[in-house]
Length: 137
Length: 370
Ligand code: FES
Image (cartoon, rainbow over all chains, first blue to last red; front, side, top):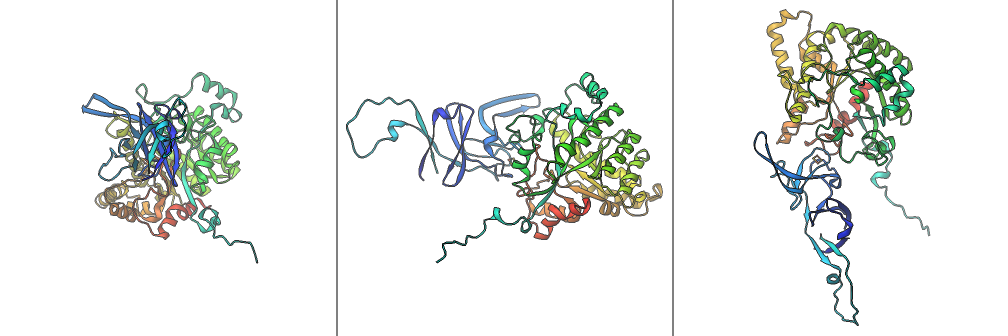
């Protein structure tokens, strides 16, 4: 797996996403509550673009009339027929045995960590203002 | 030596004729704003629209279609970047839908302003007339792929006939659309003058499910949930199929073609089996029927495909298609609504090339004579 720098963390606001092309694949990176998730930008049902999905909560109900929300913003609701997927692993909550979205490992690393190389040159104080989002494909 | 490299054609460069171009029988255009209608709507009705708006027969508060699963029941990716509701921007519709899916013809189905559910019949007729003009001026004339229908509310039957005659003279409309939820079941005699005109003009009758008439959408009353209501599209259309067949519409108008739109087709076999079975037993009650209900269904009715049922096993969909008849099915996407079907992925069962061709193109071309 190769590591791809896809964005600065500041580029994707909480609740937002960015679509990137990695090795010919259309991948969408979401930012939810300080975490980042990367998924293939295509719903496995009929192919809707997931960049337009709603980021919703998991909604459960122990009985009619009682509703509970959890994992706010971590569930993806497809922009077409509304199938829901868990952003952490692409798992479908509709017929979960048959469907999931391809998902990719994501890391956030500081710019200075990314810059380490084999040689050490004369150094100056560095002020790192931002971190980068790395997707492994 | 020549420097020219002979490069094979990519798929998207092939001449259109060699690909399967599709006919989409259910595309929903929207008004950008009601002011779009001003040039087609007499001052008196513009004023009425501003002061009184729609008068519907829905019995509860907040039973209007907003948001029904998603705002304006639309795909979340269908909001035009230029603003306005989904379906209101021709250039965006071309870019998102007509061009990439290679739509050769798209049939417009207008639902704006609760067009078939207005209880004030004169107001209803005025907006139907305005919408009929608007379909040509804003859509068909700007993109000849898009075909307009004559929308009329059948409860104002005289008004409907006058509008059908007016539009037929213009000669550009490809079907006559009536309400799926009129005051009475669609087979009733009071509506026959409309069917008589449709037959005489050789225009198919289009019936697009939805809307708010005076009845509960299910035979059992008003549903509590949208998902429950959405099922009722199939019941409504099954009831209207039975009414049309058993009250004798196809018997009386042997050349009439009827297209049910957005009702899907999974419910058809059992509805028709039951009609046939009961017809054998009770034929003395309906001596005006000369043939079995299934024979009328197979000759007079067509069904658009969306929403396609998705059974666990693909072979069940396959046998459903075979039973209903590949000849009876007309592809529809329902663009830009949330339950849109993508023609590339919607049929989750293998079809032969010949079957694809019929469902996606030639059946509709024969019904609508493109
Ligand atoms: S395309 Fe995503 S749910 Fe149908």
